[in-house]
Image (cartoon, rainbow, N blue to C red):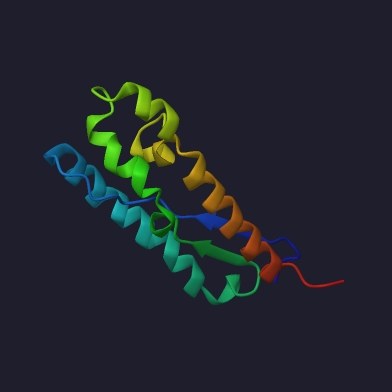
Length: 111
């Protein structure tokens, strides 16, 4: 086992309603499943961990995203990007950062 520790945040396969997003999400789900499979690779046990980022979703940003153009002022306070960048949500990024920090605490041995 390497002395290096790595963590991965999975691609978030979000269930958006239009056809183009459904096709995109199907492809992202394949990527997400491959990323999560790293948790099962024996050679990576103890120094690699993948976390799910989709379960950390900012529901407020997700809810307003489809109408962001009509609700620009609210969108600017809530998000600022597209789903593949976690909607630009500071809440979502904070949750991901916290989850990754917790994983690093698990992976890095205590002195």
